[in-house]
Image (cartoon, rainbow, N blue to C red; front, side):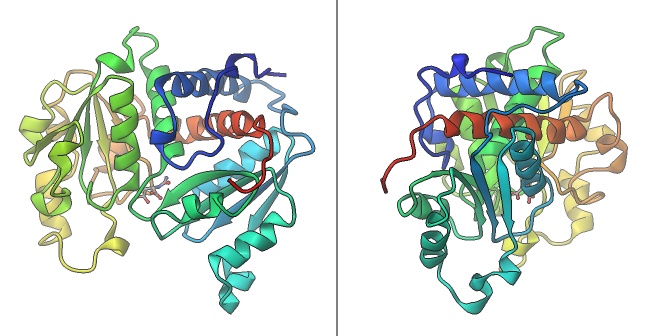
Length: 323
Ligand code: NCD
């Protein structure tokens, strides 16, 4: 069984934002994630670090990868896992988030994972319950566990070359404006010392992006120059109130990643996408499905291991009163 020895000094009680952690916390989680990744390829993937603990998954927005990987991570660690089906819960009868929180809190969970359409919902919940709260995506705000799993995936992918995330140039491309994945990844990559570039049309870049410690580009050719990693984002049509792009076909022409545009990046550059992908809109199938350059499947694999590490680390904190 993996022990938590390497977590001495891990400070956060909740994981609501990347800004809850310092570099040391992040490195400790990545080290544990790496150990769990090794475990995931062994015959017996079970570990009992969360035996006797209860994990509640509360997803108010659709999810495939994130919800299932938290469920699998919890089960692999021996926890009792409850997935709340919101459509069949009292939320559908008009219960407020805080009343739902009070009900769940009375069941004494140890860990609560929440995805919500409103930015700040996990932070609000964390003030009302006595267990650890993990943000699995809140509106356009943050998705910290995605950024952590992406970093774990990069560590693994570049292990052979000995290249450290701190020395990488990473381009995050596409719909930055609506992306919580981008907001968490920018912070995490900055903490780890990577050089971050944002590439997208002006309508899909926040007005204050140049104050985020990044370089902003509107042209893929210029932006991708010398990049080790190209992270593509989905066009978040469900968060767009109006027309942000002329057409999907035109968007692909200027910003969709195909082999021609990938050739602007560093030779051997690797491609990421958090999923779900819109093929032919932000990325071509040709690039997405090439295991030599695409890390997309590996990101999902890293997701389970990284979430095991996060659940393990946060379960070590004393269950407190409301904080
Ligand atoms: C992302 C999300 O939900 O923010 N997906 C994910 O968690 N794997 C990105 C997206 O929906 O485009």
